Image (cartoon, rainbow, N blue to C red; front, side):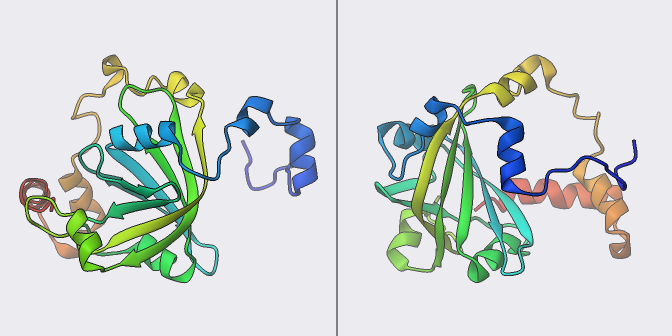
Length: 211
């Protein structure tokens, strides 16, 4: 397969639409500009959301966020709040948002085939009341995102069905992929860490540095 010299490519919107045909009427009908009771219920049960953003140059970034269900709070029909948590300090997605506030969100609910897609504009806030609303175990988040929702739609679950995402039978053995410590040791070789030291750093972070 030679992917460097592709003969058939799609490079404009008209060709793309002609190739796929018109969108399904039901899909168009599910596009909303405000959060309704079904969106709210989905968000309240979701422990996991991915946030996509692009900086001023168009460089994309995506950041997974996870916590107890309901950690993303609906403030009103067009506003969400997502508390941040301690991480690797690269702040790649937050840096993109500072340059370009447009974001996309993808919510997952374990066991549910469908996903929830939201688009909007994000603001990074240090507001005391907002951070207090996102506190866990008395610890404030370092920052929070306030998202003004411009589009919301519940997406059909064909991708989850095809992937068998929630089927316990396909969960891999933990040794099928190298441990995170092994990956750190090999990819961050300039740090001269042993696998054992790297694994312990990872496990300590999981035990003690979630909030």
